[in-house]
Each structure stands twice: as C-alpha cells, then as structure tokens.
Amino acid sequence: MKSKKQSADGIKIIAANRKAHHDYFIVEKLEVGIALVGSELRPCREGKVTLKDSYVEEEAGQLWLYDMHIGSNPFSNRLDHETERKRRLLAHKNEILKLGQKVRTSGMTMVPLKIYFKQGRIKLEIALVKGKAKYDKRESIAKKDAQRDLARELGGRY
Image 1 (tube, helix red, strand yellow):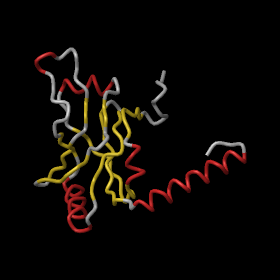
Image 2 (image 1 turned 180 degrees about the vertical axis):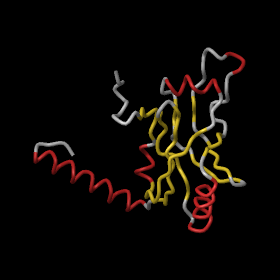
Image 3 (image 1 turned 30 degrees about the vertical axis):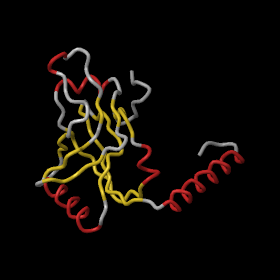
Image 4 (image 1 turned 120 degrees about the vertical axis):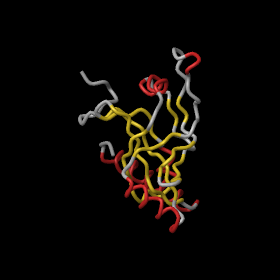
C-alpha cells in the first residue's frame, strides 16, 4: 500500500523548496544522488529536512550542498551528525563540469528544488537558476492570481 505522499512512479517527496520557484527563473534541472551518513537516514524518513536557504556549489570537480538542515536522530547518541554540514552530491563528471561552467560564465547559481526517495535511494533535484527582479515576482504572482480566479469561475481546479 502506498503512503499518501508517494506517487505512482515510486517517488516519495521528503521536502521541497517552494520558495525557489518564487525567487528564481529555473533554467535547467538535474537529478543527483546525495552522500549521507547513517544517522541522517531516519530524520529523512520522518521528513525532518529543510531546504530553505540551501545552495549548491562546484568545487574541484565535485558538487557540494550547503545549509540543508537534516534534524538530529535521537537514537544515534554520540554518533549523531552535524545538522547543517556540507554534503557531497553524486553526479557524472561531465554534468558537474557543464553546470560549473555555466555558473562561472553566466552568473547563475544552483539551488536544490526537492529531496525525495526514489526506488529506496535518496535523490535530490537541483536546478540552475537565475534570480528574479522584484517586478518579475509581482508579475508571476499576478499571473497565478488570474489563473486562480479563472479556475474559480469555471468551477474547476487549476
């Protein structure tokens, strides 16, 4: 039996960075793995993960995730992990180099969009993004409001 958060293709979302869609234009998405220590798995299963204000950087041919908060594990006592340590992301070398080149040349940045279970493994969806100006944010809010009003008039969901 599937849990409520699990989709038809076996993906169970742990946490999502909804603010990223508001603050940035998403240019390109990439699914990567994440290297975790053993005590981080239980809080991930319980949903004690926050992606707010986290970001990804490329250093020496590797991707690193900064400021992602994974809550502490009450059963790991002295072997517990640091809640906001930097975590290594797992991707192919050519993908890492391509993203790193785009970040260096075009002034874009990389942010995580969501973390989820896929076939028993924890995956992270990162995106190459470009910042929105204040007027762009207002414009996207106005579009969303207009779409909601239209759906309400038609009696359906958007």
